Length: 211
Image (tube, rainbow, N blue to C red; front, side):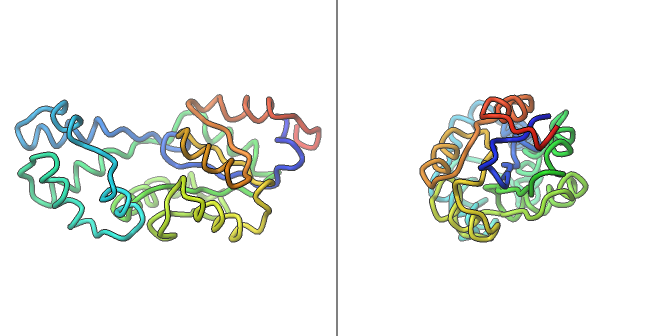
């Protein structure tokens, strides 16, 4: 394949729906069945609010967050059921993503930057250990104490990677994160399917140093 433009020196992958599949619907179905309600009711009440964001920043413990969720979603479930349902969000690696990683890793340092929480991290870090081997580092919002698209996240990662912002390319499925990265001087590509990655990189401007 052709490489990104020569000014791109490092590539940062999002985790969910870029490297691995994630789906809140599975969680809603699990909780609905366990609680005797409908997944539609759960999805209607679920929201990404300041509690959710605090959980992903490592500022709110899982036990407390699940207490809040029980009230928000009107669920009468114990901790084990809440955790089990929450973890069904995480799926398998996306088909073809290893080919993308292989095409890039010989030419660029690769990193992961993910908005996630400690409960999920325990699962994906173990389940997808082999997939993550080629990456130089995995940056986690609950460790950084900031989450995308906050500027502090992109500034932190750029410093840790040792590259100027303009030399880093973010691959992310969320428009707000792409916008946030660009506002901080990063290159960024929105990914809605695996083929977007190599196609998008080629469209940005090919370089002959990677074939």
